[in-house]
Structures are given as C-alpha cells and as structure tokens.
Amino acid sequence: MSTTAQPTHENLTSARAFPPNAPSDPDAPHVATASIEIDASRETGSLTRLWESVGFDEINWTYTPTGRHLLRTFGDLTSTGYHIRPHYALCSGSGFGIPHWGNGNVYHEDADGNPHYDFTILDQTYDAIVEAGHHVLVEIGFTPRDLLPPEAEELTVTPSPTVYSAYEAGQWSYPPRDHDRWRDLISALAAHCLERYGAEEVDTWLWELWNEPDIFYWRGTPEQFHELYRATVEGVRAVLPTAKVGGPAVTGGGTEFLHGFLAYTDEHELPLDFVSFHTKGSSFTPWRVYGPTGGDAPEPQSPSAHKMLYEVRSMLRVMAQFPQYRELPAIIDECDAGVPAHFSFYDNANFRFQNTEYYPVFQVKLMKKLLDLSDQESANIQQATSWSFYFEGERFFEGTRAFLTADRIEKPLLNAYRLLAHLGGTRVHAASDAAHGVDLLDEADGRAMPEEVDVLASRHEDGRIAAALWRHTDDQYRTAEEATPVTVTVSGLSVGTHLLTHHRIDAAHSNAHTVWQAEGSPQDPSPEQLARIHAREGLEEIDAPREVEVGADGSLSLDLALPLPSVSLLVLEPRR
Image (cartoon, rainbow, N blue to C red):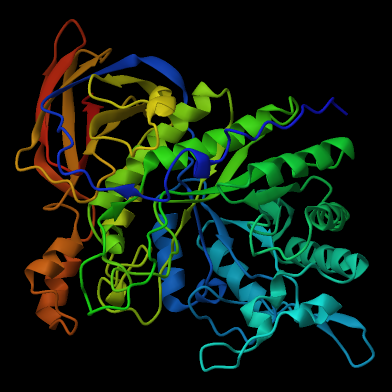
C-alpha cells in the first residue's frame, strides 16, 4: 500500500474555471493561412484508438433491428471491436425502451424472499454487441426493485402519463439493501457471461461499478459506494479472477469523489484495473425552451473543447496523486460536446450542431487533443466514449446526440468515425503553425477554443501515410466566407510514385443533413428524396485519386483549402 497524497481540489473542477457553455463571438479572428509539416519517418508511438467506444442510456434498443444495424456499421470500422457501454443493465422493468431509460430485469425475489435471476433481456443485449464483433463494458447498475432499501420509500412522485412509478423516477439510484445478495447477483452475472460467451471474449470486457455516483445517480454516501465497490469486486473476481474491474465513472466535476474513491481502494488494497470518469462540453441554458417549434435559441451558445480538456486533465491529476494509479488506463466513458443526449434543437436551437458538419470536426479535433493531453500528463487515456446511439420515433434530423436519424439516415457525426478508422496504427510527427495546443489550457481563462488548423498523422504497416487535418472553432455560429489556404509538406517518404486520396467532411461533402435541407427539410420525403439523401451519407472524396511523385529528398508539398468547419483525410500510398 502506498502513502496517499493529500487531496488538492481547489483548482481541479471546471465549474471554477469554465462556464457551462461557450458564448458566440462574431468578432473572433479567422485563421488566414496555415502551414502543416508531417515527417513520415519520425514515429512518436502507437496511435491509441481511443474513439473505438460508444455508450447509451437506452439499453433495450441495443438489440432492435436498427440497433443491430448500427453495431454492425461500427464493426466495419475496427479490427479489434469497440467497447459498448449501455446504462440500466440491472434495473427492473418490462424491457420496453424509452429515451433515457431501460432495464435488463435480471434480479427477482419470490414470495419467500429467495433470489432468482432472469437473463433473457441482458442476453439479447450482449448477444447483439458480441455478434457485431464488439466487447462489453459492463456498467454494473443500478439497484433492482427487489433490492431497494427502506429509505427508497422517501422518494415519491406524482403519478402522470410520463412517469411509471417512483422506481423509474429514481429509486433505482439508492444503494442496495443487502451487500451479500448484491455480491451473489454480480457473481451470477459473471458466471452466466462466462458460460455464454467464453473466457477469451469475456477477458476483453471491462467491469465498472455504477455511473456518476457524485450526482443524483447515487443517493447514498461516498462511504456506502466504497463498500459496494468492495462487494462488487468480490462478486466479479470470485468467478473471473483476472477480470478488469474499475470505476467510479464520476462527472467532470467529481474530483473530490474520485479522490475519496482512490484513497479507499488504495488503503484497502482493492483491485483497480482502470479509472473512469466523464466530461461534457456544454450544458445549454435553458435545456428546453417552450417556444415556437424550430425557434431560435434565447442566446447563441456552443460546446467548449477547453472545458472538456480541463475536466479530463483535472481527473488525470487526481490519479497522479496516487503513484500506483497514475498510469492506469483512464476510461472517459462519456465524452461528449453536449448534454443530455435526448434533447434536440426543437428543445433548444443550440443543439443544432448535433446535425451538422460542426460535430464530426469537433470530434476529430477532440480526439487529437486528448492524445496530446495524455502525453503531456504522462497518463494513459485509453477510451473516449461517445455517449450516442440512436432514438426510436425521431423526426428527420431531430437534432439529438445520435449517429442515425429517421430511416436510418447517417448523420455527419458517423463520418468522423469512418475518417478516424482510416488512420494507421503508428502516430508520426505532425505540426501546424495555426494549431491551438493543450499546453495553452491554463491561458484559456474560461474561454472556448478559438479557430485553429491542426493535424493528426499516422503510418500503416504497409507504409501508407494517413493524416487528418481540420479547420474548426468551438463557436458553432462562427462562419467564414473564404476557405483557409493550407500548405502541407510531407517528408520522410519513399522515393517514387504515390497514390493520393483526399476525403472531406464539410457542408458540401459527407453530409446527408445539408442534402436534406436542400430538399426542403421534408418530414415526409418521397422515395426519390430519400434516395438522394442516403446517397450522400458516407465519407466522400473531394478529389479523384491521383498519382504524385516524391523526389530524391523524400518530400512532397500539397496545397488545399479548408472551409469553416471542415476536416480532410489525406492518404499517401506508395505504388510498388
């Protein structure tokens, strides 16, 4: 057991450093020109594919036809599989999914109080994940109805058509009344998964206790949570001795809770294989505007990448106070520009970015900054989960945080993941003279990230060089009439002919949303309109592939122009 450092939380919560969202600044300067240099011969280490992770509240939509379709779509973008993290796995219910609610309905007690388990719904959920080539991040929560403590009766609600009962309204967030029965439940779950999916598959899974116990998801004390973690670890490890267990999945403001949790696991020498926490880039005020349908936002507001990076850095620095935890895998298993997922631009027009090209570019930018931050802090960020899936019953381009809209039309956000999938396994040196680096975080003074041009470059095993380069600003309302000219110099290439391909996400490319708008934003599109919209939903080339010659010095210069916002994918493939 190590000597635990004393907590220092005075400057570690984003609430003290950043507002909940970023205001618009119509006078912010643009990037006039940019120069990017890539050295293909200068490897900087493995490129952690931290974007290969998604999660969502609506666990019962995992195994619907559309849910399975989306999982298969992600399966095509990975060689190792994503980690999939659904909420509400142990909650009680009928298996009927609605926004921000679901249930696995596993635990039951008979009339004599004897426990028994029903894995019918959870099997469908995990089957869909594994069959699509992915792995489960088992979010162990929340309290089944038959395990509620007496104090749960304190939470009452007024019955209404939109609230089933006090259980759905929040009783599930109380600590279970019996740790022995909870431990047995977790052991039974682990044993069932081992039997159904086999040791090789289950060994890839992550076992995480709860979700955001520093806020209303946990109606107990931190000490009660610590003891529940002990019971949970004992339950999992009794069946799976090498299982990867961790937590506590706190919010971006949960530094104090995280420190207390790590101090407890340290003091009691409990297994801890990863540390999880969350970050959100904005909380719009108000979340919901009861105004005319499709009306403007009361105030233009945007996500803030600075806010997200500050929250992540704060968590990494709490981990660093415990030497044995500093380099543990950090799992940011909710990592999103806005919250909540099920609110749309019909609730507040600031959510419009979730339909547009702004969001995929933001996401690519964020992944690069997280990689840089991990290096800067000598940390080990392994996953940055998009808490996004899809929603049943949506209008076309409702504007929720989702990868699909009605008729399974792919939103531009999905193309960010297609683009990232093209990157190689090794990162190579790349720099832009118009980038805004994570080393400037302390100078942000609460402001959002300004406009930048930046780059993330990689090498494939077969020698291909793949680079993502973008122009972006956190201000979703900031536009530019002119594209920014960018010169890209690539050195360290093999001499001879290379095939250059150039894909782009912007308003005119890889963007079904702008096509839908051009069709008149129909909510009852004709078959012909749907065909035109679907035809533009994938990752598109901006230019036809062409051959380029690399001279004796092994370098190549390329010129392109980036509108605001946009991201390009350049791939150079040696022709042998």
